[in-house]
Image (tube, rainbow, N blue to C red):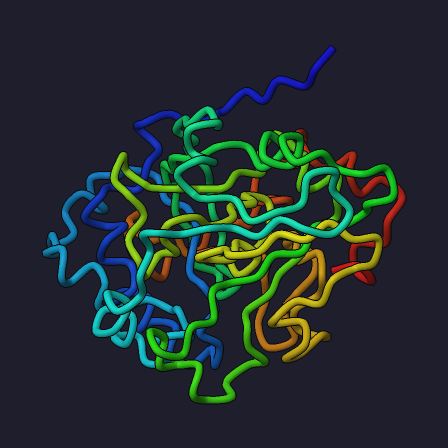
Length: 305
């Protein structure tokens, strides 16, 4: 019988929209000493305190975001992400597939079932939220192109267009930004390609028009503005793994028992959940242990972090 995922989150758990939009202002001040501008994502429960956060304008939403292709300053995506052309958009799908080719984003969308998924997302910097994404299961796209039996991994690549992404002029990381999943992770029903959030189109600075979302992994695994998907039999390199493999392993599963070399992962600080300093115990696999633990049965989760 096919696996059916049952969400334990409801609309009441979703980070209030104003709190979500304001998250980077909160993170920038409180997490400045951590030394990494990883992609932020996470979870929070909708509390009275969270709803009381001062609302932000649309311009303020994008004031603090990490998308290094536009620069390393938190305000750079807000200033420059509009320079990225997202229409037309295409995704090259190649490697060990039956039907390799360049697929138009609009054609993909017309073939996929778009739904809302309310997911916890956890940032490697310990910040967390609950976010309602709109998108489709990655497995549906991979099944459409036909995954060959020899494939074991899925590699992803972000747009790298220097004329529109001024951050590419600087060697912050090894461009283009790349990520990867094991095939069974990619085919899991929880893994989606998100095309929007809060029933709105994905903003450029959040990874328009198409980004990966893997809710049991740290947020930087959820690569933005995807232009290439490759099926391969070898573990693909990842952007942060190339930067520092001892800090950012290939799996990057949320695990309270495996600390980042520079800070504990035993707790998270939920944006929109009351006092920002409040510590909440980190959930194994970000709360999706029941759904995904079997993927890693018998693995040393410290070695394969």
